[in-house]
Length: 433
Image (tube, rainbow, N blue to C red):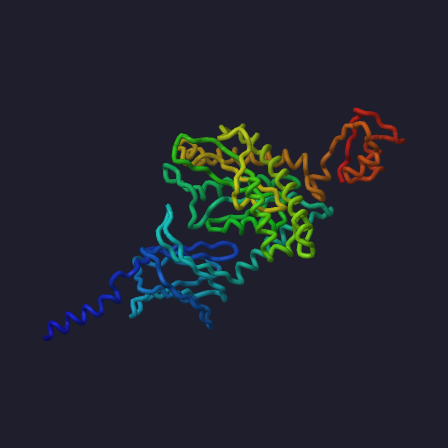
């Protein structure tokens, strides 16, 4: 009888721990505006999170789960001071985070993909990161002492954090390679007079695609450059490519902007849409997108031409696609596939620091070529630019001055013209503003 009772007791207790989800790893990624925790789990999980005060803590309860291994140390994390875990009597796993400040947590589960299995993701947004981000944005927007400003170029290193991107045949990850190229490009841009780089991702952390686009707009970037390393199932595929937004991608984005209320009060090319009727708002957005797409195509052609000097290009012309990071309606945007990391030879080159510098320099030369010809108004590059205009039939000095937004007196002075007589074929120097 005693043996039967023991067996029954074991059978009743087994469901509590039988089939438990295994939490076999925790990865922590610190981004400028948040910290992300990713729990790798053997199966989908049910969880609950809540915060405690005095002191500030975050509690994560994962139902019917057990931990294998140790939790990582939260070294140099601005938000997390310490992590603790405990196996509870009900079979759940409790993870406690000792925090340095209050936090606004958000959590969700992810299904398996080609890189990872089931995951539980917890994003922590705290005051520490927000203050640092605001400081960076403020410093970027400041004008130069002479009242002019730098051309601002947002550099986006693709992927990051738990999203490694493509993987090379020898084990290299796209996220590391493109971040290295992006940092080199940023340093080169910052060494140029009249140019300023903004790093959208400057560490090993994940940023959503629209977050990247929004960051570029918040910095009032004149151009957005997203850097990637391509991959294909055939290891023979090779060469660099440059992409701009497709017409279908632009149309879908226009519909999204006009439909979503949070966008109606935003600025499109310096114009607010919230006080415009639907037809006028649509026309203004279309005009902005047309100008942005043309500028994107022009700068993409310049960059692609310079990449040919470094090595082979995958296509001879600029390509178009509906990439989300290219959809900003008022910031010209390009995506550069620097090479095929799936090609062993190109993977080896991508890991070489000297080759990375050559790629970054080629991109820089393409950007410089574009902005020398089409500098944004109010920038130092625009003031230094000396443009030329060839007189055509019907041109007048007054009309030319209005076209280039300069005074008639400055136009005459730059060309040593005392009267109003000009001739067809005459070349005039257009002074900088």
